[in-house]
Image 1 (cartoon, rainbow, N blue to C red):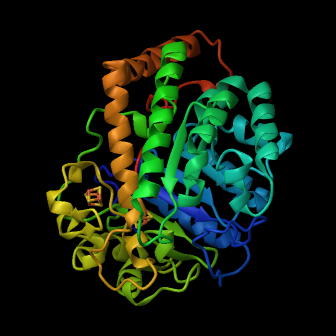
Image 2: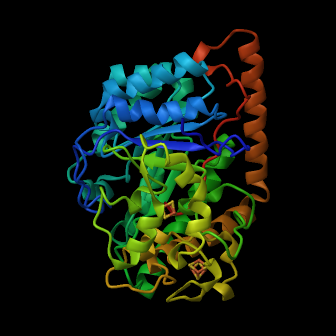
Amino acid sequence: MPTLDWQAGTPNPRLTLLLSARCNLSCAYCYQEARTGPASMSWEVARAALDLLLRNRVHSPQIEFNGGEPLLEPELLERCIRYMEARVGRGDARFVVVTNGTLLDARLGSLLASHDVEIRVSWDGVKEAQRWRGRETTARAQETLKAIQRDHPRYFAYRVSVNMALMPSTIEDLARSCRLFLKVGLSSIGIYPVLGRVERMSSEVFGALGAQMEEVVADGVGHWRKTGSVPVSFLRGKEGGPTQAPDGLCCSAGNSSGFCVDTAGSGWSCPWFAKSLRPQGPLAREASDTLDLGCILDPSFPQRLAELPTKAARVPLLTCRSDKHSSAGACKDCEILGECYHCPASTACMPGNSDPHRVDDFACAFTRATAAARRGFHEKTAGAVLAAQEGDIRSALHRLTEAIRGELEPQFRPRTRGRLPRQPQGGVR
Ligand code: SF4
Ligand code: SF4
C-alpha cells in the first residue's frame, strides 16, 4: 500500500482535486491554455486521492476543489465531502472550493454552508475589470454573495472570500473594485497579479499602480476604523510581511506539503506545470518533468512525492531566490527580498524568456507596490494590524464560548483542533 511522508507533522497538508477540465467562462488570462485530460474526474481517481490521506491518518488536511470550474461537478464534490466526513468526522478536514461563482445557487450555497466548505470566489471586481472573464458576470456574483450572506450570515463572515486577478489593463479599476468588495461585506480579499503576460512594466503603469494602492490603503484605514477588520490580505500581517529565506526553494511547488490531481489522475505539485493543462515551453519542461508525480493510483506515488524537494532543489527555475532579477534590478540587492514571492511559473511562461532567474516585471512591480502599501497602512494605523489580529483571537474565543453554550449551529462549532478564523495569505499565485 502506498504511504505518504506527511505524518512527520507537515502543517495543514493540501490536496487539490481538479474535478472538472471544463469551464463555463473563458477568461482572457486563464493559464489552462490547452486542457487535454478527461472532461471530469472519475470517482475512482478522487477516492484514491482521499484514501491516500485516510490511510496515512493525515492531520487536518485542506482539500481544495478546483478545475476548470468545480461546480460543474456538484455530485462528485458532494460525494468527496461526505466520503471524508463519514471517515474522519466533521471538522477534521478543511474543505475549500475555488469557483467563478456563476453556478452557485441557493441549493449549492446551503450545501456548502452546511458542510462548512470555504468558498473562494474568483471575481475581479467592477464590470470593467470583470469583462476579461468573457462576459458580464459582476451582477451575478453580487447577487449570489448577497443571497449566501442573507441565508448564512455567520458562514459568509468566516468562510467566503474573493480572489481578484489584476492585470496592467485593470489597474485603473483596482481601488473601485476593492471598494465594491468592502461594500459587499467580504471579510477577506485576495489580490493577485496575472502572471506571464507582461514582460516590461512602463513607469506610467507602475505609477498608476502606486496611485491605486494609495486609495486602497486609505479605504483600508477607513474600513478598519469603522469595523476593526482588515479584509485586503496584503495589508494584513506583520510589518515587513513574510520572511522568505534568500536561497532554497522559491515556493511550495518544490516541496511535498501538497499536490494537485488532474482529471486523468496525474499528480502535480503545482497545476501551472501540469502537462494536461497547458503546453510547457522549453524553460518549463525541466520543472514540469520534476514536478510530475505520476498517477495517483500508482504505488510509487508517495515515494515520488517524498523525493520532490531533493529533485526540485536541482532545478534553477525553482530555487535560488537571491539569483533572480527583474527590470528593477538584482533581487539580492532588493530591500524587500525577504517579503517577495518568486513564482517560477510566471518566469516559465514569460513570452520569449529563456532565463530561469528572470522575474516577471509585473509580478515584481506588484510585490513592491504591496510592500509599500503595507508599510503605509501600518504607519497610518499605528499598530492596527496587530490589533486586528488580536481582534480575531478575541472573536475566536467568543465563538468558542458560544459553541460551548450550544448557541451555534453545529457547523460553526470550533473545529476539533480549535482552528482560528483563517488568516488570508498574501503572495503571488
Ligand atoms: S520585489 Fe522585484 S526586485 Fe525585489 S526581490 Fe522581488 S522580484 Fe526581486
Ligand atoms: S508560486 Fe507559482 S510556481 Fe509556486 S506554487 Fe504558486 S503558482 Fe505554482
